[in-house]
Length: 249
Image 1: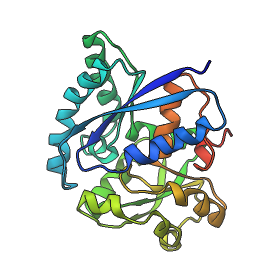
Image 2: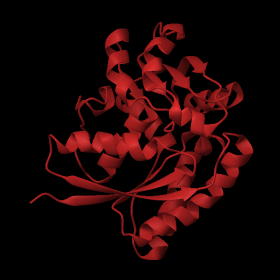
Image 3: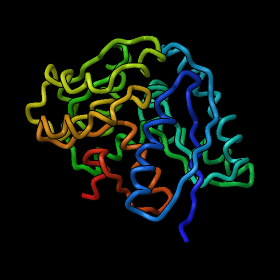
Image 4: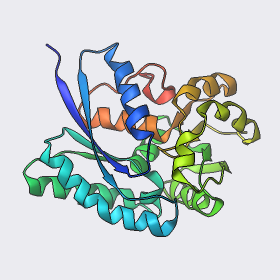
């Protein structure tokens, strides 16, 4: 009999993608493995992707962790990559510890995955030392993401900032536009490409198309988060159709 795992998601209030793309990867995995998954969310207010709103939202993540722990989830995923990165270099480790401690205090401990930490760890899993990235953020926030990744020892050769300030508009963007967006990306000497350094910007349908086009490992913040969630539950990190990071390499 297959086991069912509960996945808790800490989600910005205007995020419409984490609860679609991450479950889609788990559903694809269910087609090739026995485990089953349910998804449970708690939301924190954020409308515009600005440093001020991101910082206020991050403070609200503690409430979300407590709510999800009440549901006795098996793992929690914190959705907003740039919220973590805007709080300072290496902050994902402090955030994961704070949120884990909240779960412990409720009596329902659970491992915590941040999309920021998952992206960095995923790139290391791919042995990627030099990368190029696409983000939906304004250029100052994109530069912040670049600095954060580079502080983790991974060189960012090039970055595209699509400069979409409204988070709802980010979520409405056609993911297949990324297939042409990467034409403007310098990938010379890159070990991998991140086509969405944001769990709100849809990219799942485009990951393998871009990977085939570029001939390089291609991933996203959402795909890396899915890998890390699976690992946190001691499950094999594989799912079809999600690019290199979930290919079972």
